[in-house]
Amino acid sequence: MDKSVLEEYINQFEVFESEVNYGFKNICLHYSINILTIGREAPLNTTPEFWNNTIFNLTTVAILTLGRIFDLDAKFSVHKLLNILGQNIEILSLTELRTRKENIDFEEYVEGKVDFNKEMYRELVNRKKTLLKQYESTYKVYRNSIIGHRLVKNLVEIDTNNEFKYMDILNMYIALYNLKRELWERYHNGRGTKNLTFEKLTSQIYSLEKSEDRTPIYLHMARDYLKIYNLLKEHG
Image 1 (cartoon, rainbow, N blue to C red):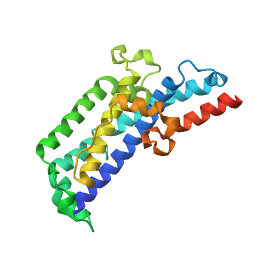
Image 2 (image 1 turned 180 degrees about the vertical axis):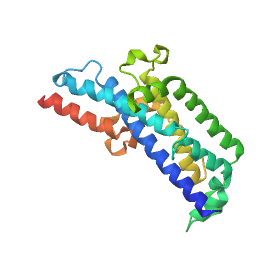
Image 3 (image 1 turned 45 degrees about the horizontal axis):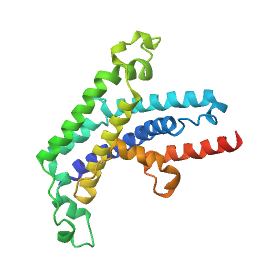
């Protein structure tokens, strides 16, 4: 296959992966602070202005990052990533995977695996379209008017019908994370991946103190938050 096409796909994917991880870590920390401190807010109340500002900024970064992922005219975006894949479906084929795997019994490795096809591709595109529609109907105006550019003086100038819910942002990032993982697994292992769910994420957050060595990347900041919380509890 054309090496320049593959290189462009990899470049687009690496930026997409980075943006998803960055935004996801921020909204995961927002969620973690809220659920882990219910009924035990005293340590945070020693520095309330800092935590109020932190929570606001976490949401701001998450929405700004959604904009970078979904901007239609950006140099890097999920649209360009999937467009390249759609025009070069063989990027995720088992034939191409063979060229990336060395020193293994490839036939045994791919036994039972299904070659990536147009139907699988359309399913990924439909996921993206659903997320784009949600972004454009709820977050795009806020991102462009308040975060990206100072187009209005305050929030009341924005259509109140576009109010957003923090949980919706989190669920959007869960979906983006699953899309990113699907593409990663297809490229590196020739298979799909088990989707992360909201319930699984919540369980992981509640288990952070017990599983520090196995913390997924999207919960690294939440893990560090727990360390800060415990220090405030002890010395604050």
